[in-house]
Image (cartoon, rainbow, N blue to C red):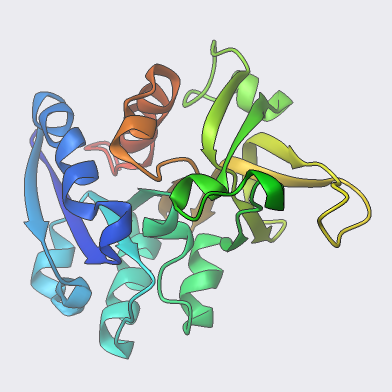
Length: 234
């Protein structure tokens, strides 16, 4: 049976919502999804469309969401529609909505930058070399099983989160003489969340297309889409 995927994209252009979502369209097609793309989150307020959707792939950084659209998104996930995204497109969306934050379970707080003397005044000031370590849960979860710990050089998200998420991998923000915190901070890198009959999957890496092309990141994102999607048996 053909499944239906809805890609919703927009918000801040610096996260390349068009280019990053287009990267996964061929995978979704070959995995048996009919793919619909919308440039506005108001589609969430359309009950007829949402009733047909098995998977939502969202890439909308910051921006705003109406009460009707948010209600439609939450209702769809609660009924079994999967919700997947990466980086600011899901973990930094709709900052003014506490109900959205509750649905996702984690919110971008910052991405610590390089030492002041190493900064040059562009986005690379926020690119750090950091390690990603899979948790015990991540080593057995179907999204991340069989994958090795790895390193990235990109934005390292510091995430505020709750205990309802299942963390598949973490990263540590070390103490630095030029930063104000006094002990290392551990943040989730990949997590899942059950919400009603639905599943949510979040990846914090994904600042650029190149990050999403990283073999491990791409494998995780593709597995995450399949894991989150409603299946025919449901």
